[in-house]
Amino acid sequence: MARQDALKEPVIPLQQEDIEVLSERMGEPDWLLEKRIAAWGRAEAMPMPATSDEPWRRTDLRGLKWDQVMHLADSGEATLTDIPAHLYAPLIGDKQGGLLVFNRGKLVHREGSEELTEKGVIFTDLATAAREHPELLQKWLMQFAVTGEEDKIAALNEAFWTHGVFVYVPRNVMVELPLHSVEYAPNSEMTATHILVVLEEGASATYLHESASPTLSEQTLHLGATELIVGENANLRYVALQNWGENTYNFGHQRGRVGKSAQLDWVAGEMGTRLSKVFQTLDLDGNDSFGRLSGLYFTHGKQHLDLDTQQNHHALRTTSDLLFKGALRGHSRTVWQGMILVDPGAQQTDGFQANRNLLLDRDSRADSIPGLEIKADDVRCTHAATVGMIDETELFYLLSRGIPRSEAVKMVVQGFFDPVMQRIPFEEVRDRLTASIESKLTE
Image 1: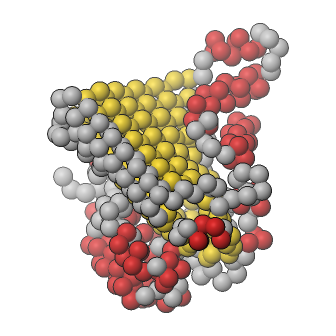
Image 2: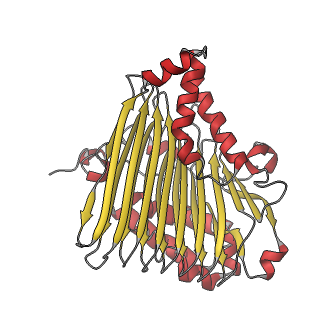
């Protein structure tokens, strides 16, 4: 079948010269520049995703003006004072293990713990890691998780990432206080983020990454990639909150790889953007590994959110647990498509996925598509998906006790999200998400 709009393939205004300028500005070594250029070659050869491609069938990119949005931020005037202070406030009391703040793709603030440095923990921006820890970056960056070969979007991120974070926790080291990074994009320039987290055997850490921007009149583009590599017997809690402005088109590839007897607890909050398409993949590579994926989203207006999740069981006695909950208003649309894949040798797998959607009016639409691909015969795998209007019986109960309807709706929505909210280990973050939900209910 001919690709949709084959004659209208968008023109990407960036070229190899832009990569060279970006790499020089960041002071990168030659091997990283070569890696970027190779990715650009792949990106040029790949077609732009279209609705004729199965993963993109429900998300149409023709409204995105590629020739206007693909202009890299120069980050010349970026400062910390331009960023809302609540985004980088301490997560627990007045302490945190480390903090990185980016504005327009530039690192504008850094905090770190001497104790963690003494233990060999690395928490730094990706550009610094390329200069100071090249052996680690060459070993791990886009080698085992997100490879840049998935599609044109992933290749473009590998070629043009503007900033990123490298977290490395050595063997048997426990990071007690949370690590925290923030990216802010106040202008209509393109930014591209790359997150790389590596926990060696027996290590543990908690890490929160937040992205935000104001809503502008012009389209903005963000390309993201996240790699979470959890070694044998290691334990990672990772929370990612996205609250881009509603002029932003956001695309991302995210993958977690979990080793033997290791655990990954992964929470994603998707509140912003005009249009998002995010691939989130969990690979349980080692025997007795565990992964929990939790997600919450609230769309309104004309927002379009497409989440594509994959739970891959590659070993014995692996367990995955996914719960995504979303609420919709206005003419917004969400798509969740999930798959549990069990390899032939992955016996005694326990896999579960559930997607719950709450429609707050009749103009919004939620597509919920769970799936199972089972190639082993000793497994327990189940899935569930629901899409429905707010329960009038619940509202009547609250109204009958003198609670105004607007307040009753807010209480029902908050109760709906609460199971996922409780999986976020930071009260201050939960409070901000609650405020964001309340603002969407009253707009």
